[in-house]
Length: 345
Ligand code: SAH
Image (tube, rainbow, N blue to C red):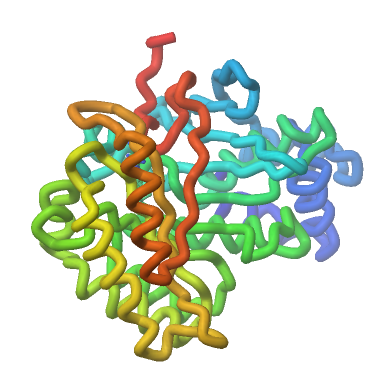
């Protein structure tokens, strides 16, 4: 949908109409303006013509039915992927894409292989969420969390990502609380700095994946521009301003970044902020999320015994560690597997 057109249309309407439209779109989750009961017929027709809200997508459901991947076709024919992960207790997380493809070419990630096509508009991000919100409504469930961990680097499309979050956070609209959003970045320092100034209570995650610059630069070429020290300094400033915890993502790749030595170096890195302002009531605000590597190319995932040992070392050193559950490998909807290869299935 063209947001500028949308706003223009409502400028000439009485004030309450916009509220009615937002309710229809974000709460009733209509699929077509025709079904927006409160709006007059002429306006509905105009909206359908100038601001259509249908989403064109194919879905793939995993065997355990807990992961649903949507391959969406955008208005220019390009394709993106979005994933719904259904957790226990009716927790439903949507993993959204922020760009078509990605320019960063991390060696372990499938999206990087397809190169960068373009940034997504704020509405194209919102649409991904609406698609699954409509899907969930049919089974009387709701979207409870949104993570920017799909295709692309959110902080290289900063304005549209924050724009989409603000639309989805709007009390009159979708009304999802800021704390239910997470943005994951390779560590674009300017983005971290900007986010610190937003006064938005969203969660920040950093894709670290290696405890030293030599190894990190091998895995993630962007590390040459934003080395670990620079990122951690920006994160410390972010924490000092926001008092929010920051997650460090670490994918476990066999015999590459999963040694005991790697764990010890990582622990030293993670403990550093305890000596600075970055603790609340003595609790370190850094925590590590260990992620099983989803094979998409040359590497293999770490053996579970290695992961266990790695986790133990971190914990012994006082680092808080969580582990990410694998979702949707069989629909190629797991982390790093999103590459919008149409026609494979
Ligand atoms: N560009 C952002 C967000 C997209 S990726 C970022 O890098 O943070 C979301 C997460 O999935 C990142 O932590 C990314 O490093 C991780 N990831 C990429 N490829 C993966 C793979 N093959 N297996 C597991 N995680 C992967």
